[in-house]
Image 1 (tube, rainbow, N blue to C red):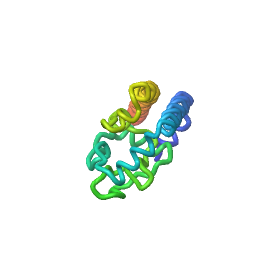
Image 2: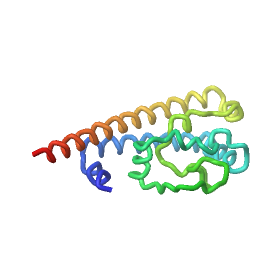
Image 3: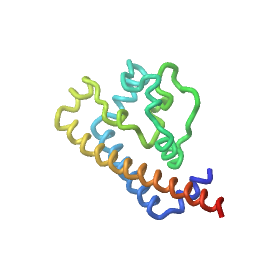
Length: 157
């Protein structure tokens, strides 16, 4: 993947990836500490999995999928668990960088377990992650537009 190599060499993008990865880590720690990871994984595997339904993966665009590939995630073409999101595995979500919906959805049961303070804490942490993710997506789109422009201009000379 030529874009992956070029992206990995850009200092600005490397910094954006680093900051985003750190924010993802902080969100993951908060979700672990508050029991969200365990509850959501259990629900996805044993319960209705109201947020990890088949088709929710269609929310992911090429840029967010690229970010996941860059972070080392393996993307599959068929679900590991029938009737569930393409990205749900036996350990829960297999992605590192997740869509807004996947991070912000709290079912009624989870909201009750977390209480308003827990939901508020998570929303603050998730908000930072989503903001940095958006900044990275914007940086990638600009980078790719520059590459396309430069390649186009090089072909005209």
